[in-house]
Image 1: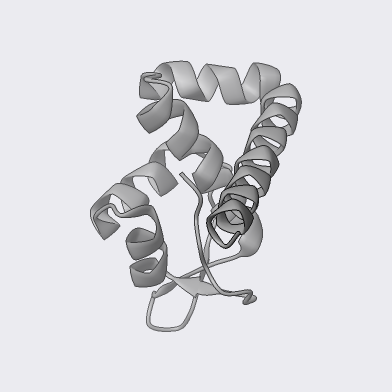
Image 2: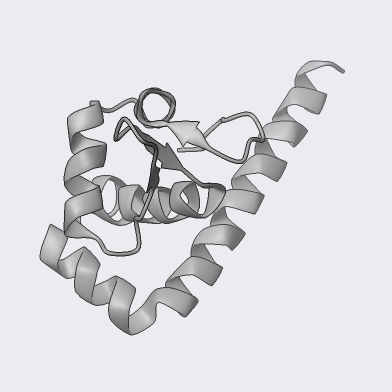
Length: 109
């Protein structure tokens, strides 16, 4: 899954939920469960997610939804192997993006 969000400093929970195709309640739940997700909150209490939060949410989504980790398993994995996992995850995402671009070029030939 590739998250397609415009380049911004902050994203609302609605934008984030739509990009991940999940309910906002799941994003709030993950925020409580994973300490790497720490959106800013304005005076009204509305969450504003940073690009770093989005990257961490992508990683959590990948572990839980795509690889089938339990929440506890994902937490342990993030704590013990975050750097390695993040590096592999970024490589996979870049390769998926390159593949999509190559398929697009092939289709235009």
